Structures are given as structure tokens and as C-alpha cells.
Length: 544
Image (cartoon, rainbow, N blue to C red):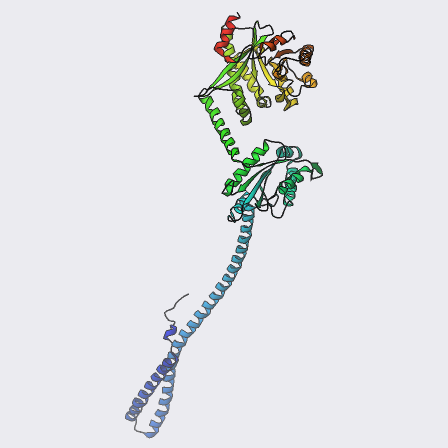
């Protein structure tokens, strides 16, 4: 707001003083004029007529002069008031403009506040609710678990859909999204006292108070999944696995409760479909052992703790070694040799089997090359192939490169593959084995008769030989039916051009009963146990 020095301040304006000042000026001026002008006239003029004339015009002059003085005095003061009035008018206009701006700002702030509230709601929904199903999400689950810690306790059920990825791949992602919506609605219908959450992907959580949770809740879940789900015109069967954990018995924090229920759920995945597992401390110990074994296996490669043993496979009269089966052994520091039965299943589950299989193949081929250079020939090398390698599309290319780099004759190499391994992907297994055969590598079907034993499968598989499973000869003495079955398998294999190895021979009686069965090869602890390469070398030296 502007300030002008000519404009009187409000505290300087006094109507009484200003009026008195003007009146006083007028009084003094008039008094001086009357006293001195009358005397001057009398001193100057003697004629009464002239004095009367002069007195008349003297009065007019007084009025004129006093009027001029009053004009000047009032003009100055009124000019100040006018400037003050103008300034007040300008300030008022500025205030009006400012008032209008403030009103506009208030409207903008009101709109911004509304937008902020909507944004806050949107952010909250995004943070605590699933956009697809509308269910509360993992963050809301953890928040709800933390609330009312003094209540009677909670039960958390973590549910995962089986094979959801395959459903997505086959039907499409839109179908998968609709399936999740249908499942969420079904789960919400179980009970109003059970809150349902989608915590990511195809995983759902159900939270309830412990005193509300009853076994009928899980029965209701099983009933839901026992029926087909209607999705976009399709009827589809979906299974689940679920883990259950209690708060605070199993865990005293929200994250820990979620972890325990997930542990139980993962245990449920190992069992049949629609399985429900309740958390137990033993599950954590199992996981700890799993992680320790994983760590130890990785360290075993770095510490060179693996060693390759070889088990001889003889011709049926035991005169000569015809094959050597390469078998890995784990010579863990400070312990005895660890059997493959204890760590191979874990390696297949964890994915380390790729590394193990490659190591076995590399070391076995190196040893075979060494024996060839020493003049020990006339036998082939058998290497077990896992299901992981058989289903790995890149393995064939790696195998071909490995065979070329190691300079091992493919005719001296044989892969042993179990029935169960092949049946995990029968069409894919056939294609892979055909490519293996094209390289000149032989293929043997291990554990024949232990599982499927379908003649149709046997005719379709591109294999060179079979190994009759040890279960066929494990019982002694043999009954007539066992003799007939063994003879029939061998005769059938001969008809379709396959070599036959009988494995699992552990007694002299078992060996004597096999000798006249027309098998090609025999293998077992009675004939020769898996031993290090040095001991095999001594056996090869003796049979020269």
C-alpha cells in the first residue's frame, strides 16, 4: 500500500483543531485589519465623505483578502483529504482484486484438496487392495494380523492353485484372470467371519479368529474345489494346496505367521492334490537340512569332494567286463562316502543335477580316454541320465560339444535312463533319444519292469538294451512263476533286437539261476561292487 508525504495521517486530522485554526487566523487577520486600516484612513483622509467612501471599499478589500486566505487554507487541507480519499479508493479496489483472487485460490485449494483425498484413496486402494479381484492384498493381510493382538488368536490359511501357469499358457491370460476372479468369489462365500486376500499370483490367504475357525472351513474349501469352475464358457477342474498356521502359537509376528503358513503350504505341494498341511516345527528343520545340503553340495564341487566309482557289468559267464557303470560318490570331509540315494533326489529337485551329470560325464570320459591310452579296451562306459537332463532342450547341444571335445568314441558311450524318467514326457523323451542315437550313443532302459513295463512303450523307444529290475530276482528261492517271467522278458527283448542285463545279483544262488536264462550281461554286488578307478584298473589288467 503506497504512502504519500502530502497525505495527512489519520492521527493528524482533528476537525475541532482545524476549524479553530482557520477561525483564529480569520479573527487575527480581521482584528489587525480593522485596527490598523481604520487608523490609517483617519490619518490619511480628513474629509468625512472621502473617509466614508474609503471605508466602504476597505471592507470589500477585507472580504476579498480574507476570502483568498480562507480559500488557500481550505484548498490545501481539502487537497490532502482528496488524495487520501483517492488512495483509499485505490486501496479498496486493490482489496477487491485481492479478495477475488483469494476466492479463486480458495476454490483451487478446495479442488486440490478434493483431488488429494481422491489420490489418497486411490493410493490406499493400490497399497492395500488387489486391482484384479478387489480383494485386500498382502499389505492389508499383515496389517489385519497385527490388529487386536490381545484377542483369542488368529488362523492363517495360505492357498495356492496347482498348475495355474499351465492353465494360463493353454487358455490365455484373460482366462486366467477370470479364473482368479471366480476363485476369489467362491472363497468369499465360505463365511462372513473369514476374510479372503489375494497376496500375489495364484496365491490366496484366508484369515479368521481362532474361535471362529472350525474344521468345516477346510471341508468347505475342499468342496469348492471338488466341483468344476465355470470360466468364459469352459468347465475346468482346479486343484489347490494349502498351509495353515496359528497365531500366536506358531508365530508371534505377522511376517512370521505368513512364513509359517507358507512353509506348511510348500509341504502340502509335495503331497496329493487338494492337500492341507498344518505347520509343525519339523518342517523348519527339514528346510534347514535342505538348505544345509544345498550349501554342502555346492561346496563339494569347490572342494573336490566328489569321486567317481565304477561298477562292472560282466558277460553272463563272468569271463570279461563288458561295461562299466559310472557312479558318483560324495567323499565329504570328515565323513564316510555318502550314497547317491541321499543326495541325488535332492539334486534333481534343486537343479544341481545338471552340474552333477555334467561332472560325471566329463570325469567318466576322461577316465575312459586314459584306459584307452593304456590299452584297456573292449568295454563301453554307461552313464546315468537324469530326468532334468532328458527334458532340457539345451542338453543335446551341450552333449554334442562335450563328446567332440573329449574325443571319446560315441560307440563306447551308453546312457542309462529309467522308466519313470522317460514317462515324465514320453513324446519328448522319444525325440531326444532319437537324436542321441543319431550321434551313435547307445541307450539302455534301466529298472525295466519296475513301473510301467508297457510293450507299446518298449516298441516305440529308440533303445539298444534293457536292464531287468532287481525286484524280479530279489526273492530266493525262486518260484516257477519268477523263472517264467524272467525267461519271457529276455525272449521278448531278443525278438525285438535288444540286449539284456540282469542287475541286482547279490548271491551265488541268484547268479546260478540267471546263468541259463540267455541274458547278455549280469551286474550286482556278488559279481562286483562299485569301486574307484584304481581297483577297476587292476580287474582290467587281470582279464587281459
